[in-house]
Length: 423
Image 1 (cartoon, one colour):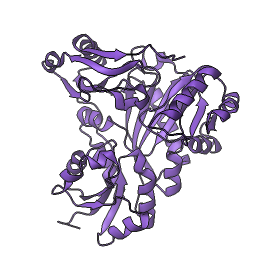
Image 2: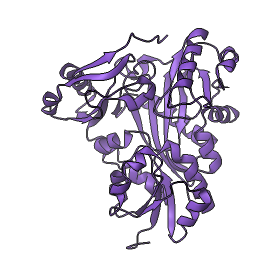
Image 3: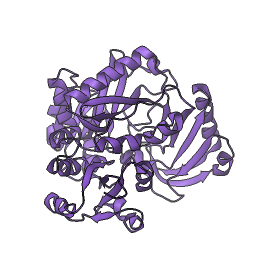
């Protein structure tokens, strides 16, 4: 403990918070100790820069026993991660020291889409047909059980990578073969086929997506819902194109969504930490798409700008056993993020013009993620965005007007293949 602040270990990797945003959120709350595995590309890229900013512990190639020994001299009061890929490792380390994080079993359930569906069904929260697929040979039986159309996606994964809708057996076989040969998957990776949840575009409004996400922070079993994040319509095959806070839903629908989220978190035994729960808006009511045991990507920025609430700080507080504050009612602005999303047949970014004009528009800020000449591939999911426009408006009408302006202003072209089948 330094300067009276508790030490909080953060297992670093690609995720919802950068090292600098974590350090900024922790100011006055905790001293951050970064646990860094240099075998991870996202960690390797920032490892040298972290020294001098915060204590760093190199855990490259280390077992959990060895990592625990490395932490031995430190009086660590808590541990957390903002990365989907580090939830199980972090849960194991927390369990060794009786720290407030997800239990190892809960972390496993949250990162295993099949196990998560089974757990929610046993708790009578929601039954969604889901079958494991280990190679093309098992695909037909899974499709027969689940029915078509269906969703094909990795059993464990994030960012909508290697995820699509399939409408017939032939298409499903082709997609699975393609995914299994993709460098980000590998031939041994498990996939799942699960029931397609059909959305109702009229619930949020025809200009908006037919799904939302719920951002919550739980401490010692006490769930505090922070925000319901609205969405823009999905791009093919199932890629997100943007978020908005506040959402467009009425109070009755908000209440149904929060009740469903609470039931799911309780059924999955989430007792500590931040969660990001995706909900489909269907004609039969809200239905769970998936529950994620960490802060959702991009949402912390939206909530901070719209409400002045620091979701990263609340997640750090939960790791120290502290309940999150409830945000004050009302919104400063309607904030949004609009993702510049390549079409499915794009191979490479060929032209990216209009950035100067966009920079002159009040309320808009462009974050450039790709340069001209960079490869793009829809199978990487959200990681294939070429840019993100951060903006705000007085109301939802102005948000839509600004998005229309973005589309008129940005002149983006791609080198393309023939359009793939999307079903």
